[in-house]
Image (cartoon, rainbow, N blue to C red; front, side):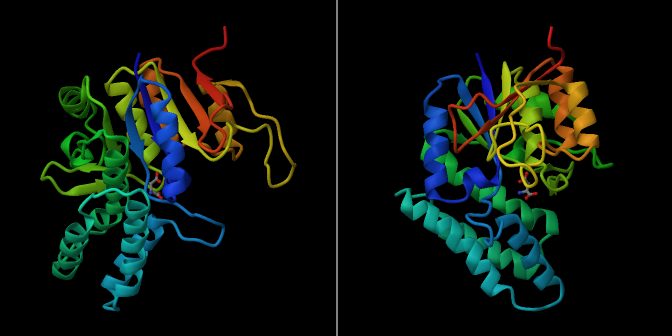
Length: 278
Ligand code: ASP
């Protein structure tokens, strides 16, 4: 049995959330492959790390000092590390990144570092191996994912191992970093689940599944227990958003169900997304 898990930004926001992720992963030995997003907001008026990285890049573009923003990013990750008593050597990596930013860095490479650092920390915390997505997730020159090459590379490197993989990015044929569109860590998780023929793709977020209506309008709406891929498409068309739309195809094709779960309420069963309900 193999479960591939993806944790979104709110599950990665601080040391407290990291502890919840660890408890979830440790509670089931089949949870061997973990894909993570960059640290998200800790509260309503906090910032997502990925947004800060885009902001950093904009500063670089306009020749305005990005030191203050860069420092916010660096301190977020260093404080998670320190609070969890990890010894991940991030200082040197942040210094090297800052130097690269002065020499010239692509937007994709810079914004991908949110997931990179989050995955490094999570790998150390869980005692799993860190597996960089540039080592397996291959894009073609036209920007589409080369699925056969990516699947083959992931099977070769991850089979039988316990790994943490950064979401959101992969490598172009020349080795440079390329990201998906926003929210793309869902796609990384789906590709990893399909490549490794997982029994289920667990997508851990901050709601207990798909809700029957918008919680901003109706208080405490019910959770949908099971939904088919087809129904999901219709719901998405009507504005329901739980997953990146490109995350469906890879798992659906392999007949792998998606289970939407809540990191803050791990005993809730969440929503199962399946091919059919018969
Ligand atoms: N961190 C990226 C974003 O904010 C990707 C993701 O979270 O899925 O869009």
